[in-house]
Amino acid sequence: MAKRKDKVSFTISRFKGFWDQYKESKRGLIGITIILLFGVIAIIGPSITPYDPIRPRMSGYYPGQQPALAEQLCVPVWYKNLPGGQNISENLKVVPDHEFTSKEKFEEEWSCMYAPSQYNITVRHSETGGNHDNDGCIEISYKRKSDEPAPSNVSIILTKEFEYPFHAPPKSIWMHLSCFIDNKTTLPKFPFAMNIRLRRGNEVFPVMSWHEITSDMIASRWWHDKGKTAGPVGDIEEKIFTKAGNYTYEFELIILDGEGEEKDLTIYLDNVDMILYGNAFGLLGTDNEERTPRDLFTRLVHGTRVSFIIGLLTAFFSILIGLTVGLVSGYCGGAVDEILMRFADFMLVLPSLPLLIVLVMVLGASIWNIIAVLIFMGWMGFSRSVRSMVLSLRERPFVEAAKASGGDTFYIIRRHILPNVFALVYVSLATAVPGAILSEASLAWLGLGDINVASWGMMLYDFQQTQTALVRGIGEYWFWVLPPGIAIALMAMAFILMGFSLDEILNPKLRKRR
Image 1 (cartoon, rainbow, N blue to C red):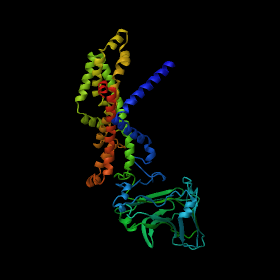
Image 2: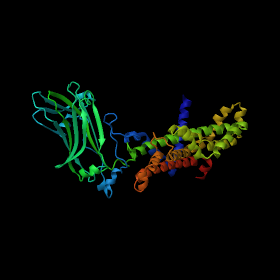
Image 3: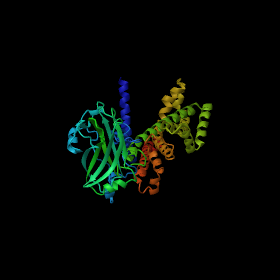
Image 4: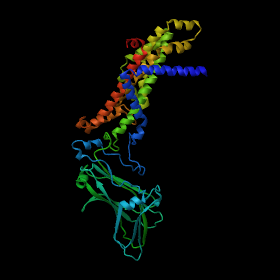
């Protein structure tokens, strides 16, 4: 136990001595600070960016009905603080509580009117009606006795006022609704109609309509539908939202009651929603993905984790393989040395990038395949450096003494050779990371990246594949190109700075010069 404590104490004192030397290097401190910053971002990334970096959707909707996060090619939200910011609009959720979870909010925010008024019509909030998630919905009851005349239709209109605070129109309007008839209701097949309108003062603007809904479609199960405004982007939006101000959202349910028999039915509405998509979103805007535009800031943050995984795993296993080959080749010599070094020479003369492209295309553009290929292509140079050191070390007197004492090959390599080459291992680990990150970014930029992984290289590839962004140029979409480029440069520079500082401390020749 005492020996173990002495070893721990000795290790701690050595680390303190190393740190005292390392913190005197300004570039070393800059490098490790940048690395720690990226490390924190990689760890807490999901908590600061709640969106999916690959296929983002808004949460809180029926499965398969989730709306997109934002519109395509949005600019950052802080653009509104720059000159010309009056032309910026952000996303606006017209119905914040679209699931109707709160009775108080429903009664406070919504108004109802219906015609004809002589029939027994009630509209109220229901917490468990229809057994749809039991999170709340709107319950509409309609009763008509058989001796009462049947109207051509019954119109029930729900209205909600909202403020549109932007001076620019939205890029598009998205709508959603769910409808259900209580399975206790017994009635023949007859049609429904639904309309969504927006009102500005006395002006009414039709937005969307459903005219072919029948009672059997929504009986005993929830019926869901969603859609965007039709026509060119901005066609309807620019007519309605000409300025900031107060607007009214109207949802109309029309029961086409043309039958003579008695009517007694209960209809439930849920997920009645409208989202106005603006042209600005997030800290870095969105990309041009057609169905699910992605938040560029989310992809940048998640790319930090991917770059760490690629850089560290590739560097660690490349150095491990190179260290093993170099130790065995340098100490054993002879035929073993010839075979291992000639194979390393063969691998070194092969063109790296074309071989990487071929291997990734054959194996598939998976992130793990890319890491495996980078490891396979990254150990040769380090193995030769280790071999040259081992060739010198094996002739030293302390190695000869170990041989004379009966030490076997594995013991001598482990206890006498390996500790003397570890300084080179530390430095090579630090300097190998940026090479792996740059190689992955290069493969991704060439279209060989993993499409299911949000990496910095894939961000650059997506930009070059977007015709609109290329035509308008980097000057307009710099927030898409520059952040991943700067992140790659900073990460590479940080590990290189740390490697130089480690070399100054661990290399005896450089340490004497200081």
